[in-house]
Length: 148
Image (cartoon, rainbow, N blue to C red):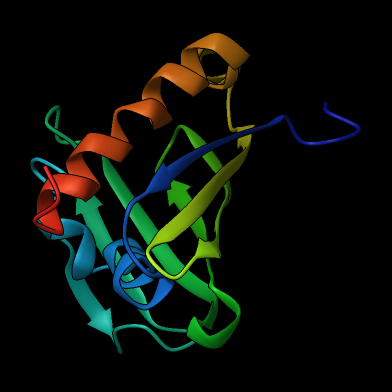
């Protein structure tokens, strides 16, 4: 049992205003830059309580619920359940550094649902591995916004 759920955060910058960047982290917006991202909308889209599901390349299903969506504050958050693997939160906080420069901070907090999943969560949240994973988002988001 974890006293504090394991978590990892990483940041990157995009040469675009916050109003252009934040929509990239919605259920539908992520389709523009995340290969294979095909959300099945179950209810709503971006509002708190909206739900959708995704399937990984291996067929693993994840159910997502929007817990926070405040574009004016640059925030979007999700609760997620990777069926049989882990539960957790994904928080995306965008901060405009300049009129055409936005910092994106991504935080995953995951709790494994089994001993086998514990190793997967530990590996995913290992600081260097997590930073490398999130670093891949920057060029993909930039390309989707026509900046690359």
